[in-house]
Length: 198
Image (cartoon, rainbow, N blue to C red; front, side):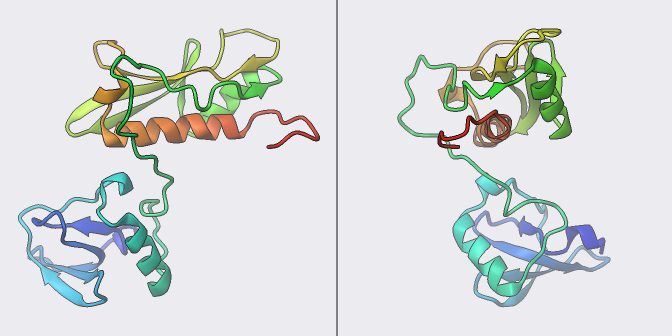
């Protein structure tokens, strides 16, 4: 088995049947350590490597992984996640929680976005996410190209592939988490004035 897959949290046919992958046989049988600490053999029809926001009992999985000394080669269970609030305004289309992160120049903000692996298109940093079979693009405003003065991060929105801005209530859990992760990462690189809270 490829060492990169070792210790990834996998889910078999039963969505509550989560465990850390230890081995796979040529016939497709998996050896998995479950949350009870038992090594079990699974022969599921399909196996998924879920995004952590989709994992049931993520906090328990993280705690158990620490006890086992699990070190994943692919960032999964320790990936930063955001859960979508249940009380969103039905008309809302923009998250402003990470707006207003100031950079000395648009170049610096765009450079941070690309260094983190995000695409810069026009005035936006973007990331495409496949969520429940649909592709959604999260976008954060980073300023007009070639703008040389100080710039601040703008709002976070999501669009479908037709360019339609999605109401926040329609954004799937993986797209929400990854969009928020991008916005938070861009905001975290902002300029902080001395004597002010970071």
